[in-house]
Image (cartoon, rainbow over all chains, first blue to last red; front, side, top):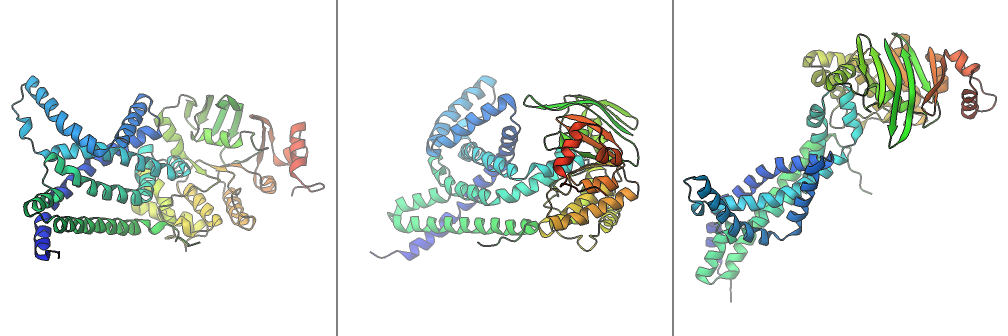
Length: 237
Length: 250
């Protein structure tokens, strides 16, 4: 049995139409998760009393349960919950008509925030405290010291891990089809089922993810090189 | 100009400072010496509020404050009129030599960028690094990094510069260049408080030596007296330990 290359090409192009959805979920998720993850990281570093406990419970939960399960729970529970709330509050919205994209963003943000908070926390801790003190003693406020000295360096340290998390997120969004989101994977699955040409369809999505993830990695590497000019050249040993 | 009274500080119930007094007049070069664990560095860090004292009073020019309760505003005011030179330089790794100096001027003190750059160039010129303005710390030797650290301190024209063992992390052959600059500053009348193990330097640059041990000032006075005819037995013991037999100071 040979490959139906024509079909493969068609599915590839068709699935590409799901790319804005895939990337949109990723971008929105990062937009939500980066500030939240940063806040959690700061809570962890400064051992903010009660919040720290809550944060660590949340992080254990988010990282210790399968994403598929989180999707199923959110997708089945959240709408009913929101609906009940909407009725109680007397809002005139049809919760069940809401775009499933929002649910996807909620689930992936829930997950990614936990991952990012750990990445950001450890990255901040790699910048030695002495520089923070030097910034303070030269008359900067703590906030200025963070913004100008600590965070730029922490960001650079975090980049490889951020790249990883982003790529995991891109791949992870393929599970969004479970929420009836028409992303790259969902379109390919539908096509595959329509023509019974599974191999071609799946090859097509493989290629799309490979390209997108490859481009993401390249982008991060580029940024890392750009921002890292102040580092001593790494000597192989 | 600066006086500290009854400064106390504990870490996890270990009392590191047990009631320290310190007086610094304008133009003074005060060298703080003593065995490790005496509390010298902690004293210096409390003055700049990098550590928060448990108790103590500070008079700084017109300001009078409780060192335990000082508000963020007071702390900032003190920090803007003092400068700190660290043992490990603590340069901003993501900034060039020039930016390391301008950063505190522009961000901390709100100086216009152009003025800050002029001040930074002058300061770096003074420490002999005008040919390294665009170098990142990772490309500078330890001695050069510490000189940038000193430039960062003098550029802000502080009332007093606090040096915390500025040469302790340096290779022996690099110590001279840093001490040379500090000598120069002393000659120009810069007010300095220096925690140091360099007794020879303390002896001929400082006009007052403070000997500390176990969280207290044991004795203080002009170098001649403290180093050559100390009144306290503990000072004598320390000097005997640290100086090779038969050696004398300057």
